[in-house]
Length: 295
Image (spheres, rainbow, N blue to C red):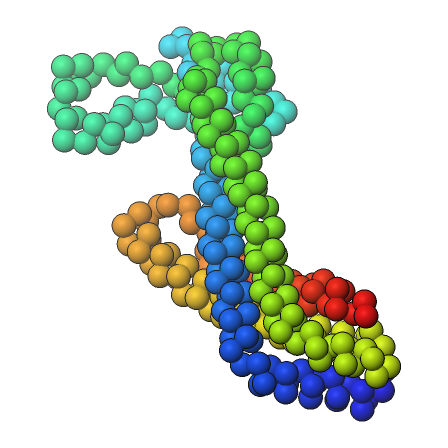
């Protein structure tokens, strides 16, 4: 392809967009709106997946030691826990630390513990974190066999319900995003097809005078790519503003909510939308032209 041909294609694309301003505006608006909706759902699904991962990471095993366990027994138990496959962190909680933690949870009602006097009913314990929460049920029986261990708790029913919830979030989110992506492609392609249909006579004339299919196709491809790119940029600008606004509001009211940081998340999302919009624009033009090239 010569330089003059490339210049012609670019010039023709520019004039085509200028001549059909209303149709071009409608196509760009449709692309922008479709990708904005897709981007919003992507943000929700990705953050829901991040929340699911955060909830799973908070699952841990609490290992309660026998009251008679002292010195070497505690040391040996801690070493055995750290050496177990899948265990990534072991934190010890002394009897006094457990009592203080319970007082903090009681808050203004901590006076209820005065009835205990100087007696501390809380056992020495270990908080155990694992690399994969799904393995907890397999690890617990081995922990309970360690000398000095009275019991190991991890809230079996709560954990099982949480795993069901995170599974629904991930699978449901993936299905929803795929559905929206297909719907977006369909809407954008049909919008661009209307633009091509409005110029079908122009395509037929060029075909009759001997223009090759690719010579006819290139300006339409460039036009579709331009509309897809422009619509994606517009959608990305709105998405960034929406996310930053929501982020500020959430951090103001729920400071510890595990929301993904704006960077590099928004950068990747913007790049995905721009590439998708450009490719969908090109694909929509190419698909729409096939019918009119068969003259």
